Length: 90
Image (cartoon, rainbow, N blue to C red; front, side, top):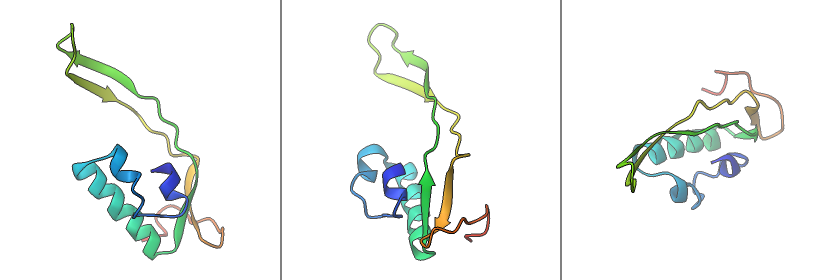
């Protein structure tokens, strides 16, 4: 998503490699809206995922992961490189 957001490429095949279902749908809608509004995203989010559970313990088939993403340095800009304040792209 970080790579596709640099150009608001909502058609990037990479998006479907890493997300599915409702998550992919939300990403595509957001990226398409950015594309229509002439926005791109610069910087990178900071992620710190942690496994919170794995079942069954001996040979896990289900793993729960939690993460608190930080997008402080992952900001939207107009394609002309001017910064877009939060909420101004609607």
